Structure formats: C-alpha cells, structure tokens
Image (cartoon, rainbow, N blue to C red; front, side):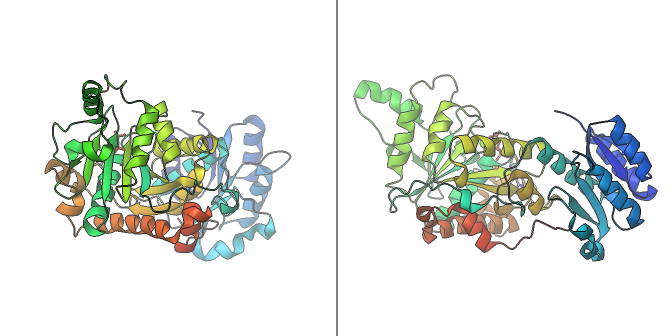
Length: 418
Ligand SMILES: Nc1ncnc2c1ncn2[C@@H]1O[C@H](COP(=O)(O)OP(=O)(O)OP(=O)(O)O)[C@@H](O)[C@H]1O
Ligand SMILES: [Mg+2]
C-alpha cells in the first residue's frame, strides 16, 4: 500500500497532534510554514497526497498554497481547516475543486487523521461518484424483476472479516421474524468459519452437506425448508456445512436453485456469507435481491467495501449494494463513509459493547435477549428500510436502494462539518 507524505500548514498548537496521528497511520507529515516551503516541497517530492491548509488564519497565504497544489498538471487535494462560521467564505471564488474538503474547528487530531486517510483512499482508487459524492441512480442497472410475490433474498457480505456480517444477519433475521411477523430463513453460507448456529445455541444441526450426502443413498432431494431447523425465536436456521473439507456436494448452481426455491416459502431469506469471491458466493450474489455490506469505520473495512463495489460493477450487481455502517458511533461521520465507499448507508448500527456477545453466549439473538437496547432500535430501522424498499416496489422499477436512500435521508455530503 503506498504511503503518502502529507503537507501540513497549521498553527503549531494543532500541528503537533495532527502530525503525531498521521505518523501513527504511516504517513509522512511535513510541516510547511510558507507558500515557498510548499513550493520547494512539491518540486522535490511527487508523493504528497494531501495538503492540510489553514482556511482561517492568513488567508492570503492559504490561497497561494492552494494555487500551488493545482499549478501545472498537479491536482493535490486540499483539506481546509476552518471555523464552522467561516465555511461560507470558503468558496475560494468558485475555484474549489471536487476533491478538496473542509474540516471545521474545533476538531480532534484523530478525526482529522481519518479524514486524510479517506481522502487518500479516494485518490488511490478512483471512486465513481458524482460531485455530491453519491452514486447517481440514473446510471444504475435494473434489478431482475422476477416474481413479486416471492420472498426477498438478502445477502450480508463484506470481503473483510470481523465487520459484523454474522451479527447483522442473525439480528436482522430475528427482528423480521419476531417483531415484524415475517417468515425468515437464515442461511449460514460461511462454510469455513460459520457460527450462525452456535451463536443461536444450536449445536449439531443437520447441515445441507449432511442432508444432500444422505440423499444420495435414499434418492431423496430435500429442500432447504425441510433441512432447516427452527430456532426458539421462530427463525428457520440452515447451515451449509460444519466442516470446510467435505463441501463438494454443495454444487454452487444447486445451492442457488435451492435458495430461489426457498423464496416461495419464506418472506425473507437472509444469507450470511464467508468473505471470499469463490464460485459459491458468485452464484449467490447473482440471485440476491439486496446485498447488505456491513462496514466498520476503519480503513481496512472501507478498503474492502470499495474493492467489493468495484467487483460488483463487473458482476453487474452494484445497484443491489447498500452499506450498513456498523459500530457507527466511533467518531467517523457516516457521510464521510458514504462518500469514500461510494455506497449510500441504508442504516447505522451503533457499537453495543457486549450486548451481542452476551446474547450469543446465551444462544439467543440480541433482539430477543435485549429488546430495549438502543442498538436493537438500529436493527429495527434497518429492517424497516428493507421492508419499505420491498413494499415500495422499487426493485421492480429499477430504483434500487439508492432511490430510497435519497428520499429517506437528509445528508449533504458536499460540505460537512467534522
Ligand atoms: N455493533 C456492534 N457492537 C458491538 N459488538 C459488535 C457489533 N458488531 C459486531 N460486533 C462483535 O464483533 C465481532 C465480530 O462480528 P461478526 O462475527 O458478526 O463479524 P463477521 O463479519 O461475521 O466476521 P467473519 O468474517 O469472521 O465471519 C463479534 O464478537 C460481534 O459480537
Ligand atoms: Mg461471520
């Protein structure tokens, strides 16, 4: 991963903390006091990825520096640090570019570090966004319309491990079943490290691999609805395989067909995925109505989501993607994440301490075990949005998640406070 130099023109009191944070993130912070300093730096180095400028004090100096960043064929993004009240003056006489950003005082050095990281990720991976930062719904492709009476296939995926895929899948399933009165099949398609059943206290469940292997000798062909086991909360739980070794029987096409058939019996088929792009996952992506992408506010998870978005373009499924910002209250703004990942946030799920772990230890979902926790309200909002989307028939009109998002949220990602 290339590590950039970051030019910093901030007052001494702020410089030290910011430089420390950036160095910790692996960037090279370089102080620039004057426009001449910056000019020399830019003539010597071509790895300056971002310049942090002071948009309040010595404005003329800032304008000079800004011009240097965009001299000749350079286009180095500037992060302008200003007071909230000064934002209006920051139009830079109409010269501000899309890749510049503003950051308002007072701020924490850590949040500024995150913003710089986000800017550098964007610089490195061209993000297909409009100037508002959100993918234009006009460019979306239609979803397969299919049979509108069938259940919805929702897969939960991010190629990065540990971002909350299983947690969100299990609790979304429980919420839809218990509070929303829906019939839900929850499938653990993570044949390597799957822990849906164990987190619901269901040991030694008969798996699809077991059933289909037995079927070879009996001549039967059991459906997912028949193989699944009911949890106490009413959700039907299906595990693909217990061991990652004997999964040859799980022919991807057959699995995909079985998932589609299950949609005739269930209102929702929620699929927890292993973080990979193998053939099994690819056929499931293809069948999905929605792909929920949990992303935690950290650079590796965001990078993984950006990568997935690029893969999704190739697989022609991008319009089905929607981000769920997990552990959303850890200091990074959701608007920042939407802009960086290039996906709208369908919902936010706050960080809930030990709530999920404690519920799993008791073999329950947090929805049943801790129904009054605020994080369960977040899960409910997520499910409400999914149901709204289904009921609005947006999928049929090709509106996808983004249209709902645009109508339902009020963010202005072009100019945001820190
Ligand atoms: N919002 C949250 N608040 C508190 N803890 C959370 C939250 N989301 C996830 N966790 C915890 O983080 C850990 C990882 O979550 P989880 O197992 O759901 O991730 P995953 O993406 O399924 O991982 P893997 O890729 O390994 O399957 C778990 O211990 C879970 O309880
Ligand atoms: Mg998991």
